[in-house]
Image (cartoon, rainbow, N blue to C red):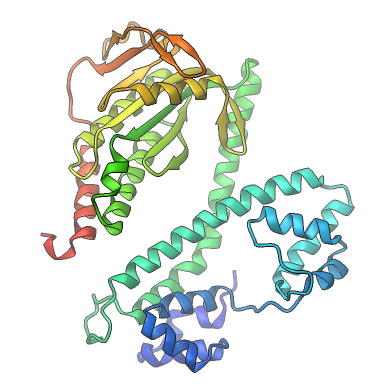
Length: 393
């Protein structure tokens, strides 16, 4: 992948202050825009925007239709599914890169290589995923900007200055497209293997779905500042990905204080639920976790899971007591006889839109420190350093 000239950190030279400003002026920023960005503390964000998207829009909707072979409705629909605001008819909103991509899509549709429904489906998934990745990157840059000392001496190598943030972003962000491409290929391979396994089994997609959510998160969010709340969510998310993937499971999605995951076997699901509960119990910053597990046939679409088993798992989680793992009868049946677990029957509970169902509380037969304890301690130390840099050590 070729790198834009302005993206080379070495090109900024020793005088990074002047180099960043000269670079932005060369990319079309006005002195007034630079002065305002410096006053508002947004110079790094402005620099990253101009570095990563140096192209300016030069085409309106009519020009795009003429050059791509798509009609206006097709362009607007594609644009909307990608997550972009729909431009006005006479608005100059499309770059040359946009036109090139839309032209390729037009060729696919004209040659019946792909259907309109397929293109729109993929556009929706790609747009949603890329929006989340971009938002996460901006959050990371903004967090560094917030900690950047303005007007401080620039000799300290460890110091976060606007210029250092720009240099760091200029070095890291161009790597992201390659990481995305490689990661996509690996996940595509894993998805194909899952589907082949389902076909070979001849019984549809069977597995275990789990939900785990932090108890009292809403109340906590009203008691701590934004930075601390973000650090807590980050810690929970890292713990969830560590625990789930270690057991061969997949994080389906994170919804703030809740994680939804899936795994093939009940014993792996049990280990995930127990390790998540142990992980939050051992972290002062995280509240107790409640986990619900259910097993059975699953419907997968666009990476998400649907069906009665998913609904059952979600409802079980909502009635679980803090710090407990509650499982359905199907999970209990698969775990029965395993000496490392204890299953205690609860009285049957009525679950909304499902009815009265038997449930069991899952525990370890013997308390043991989770193998994620060391990772938990590292995450806890990282959160403390982020929330209170001066108190670290």
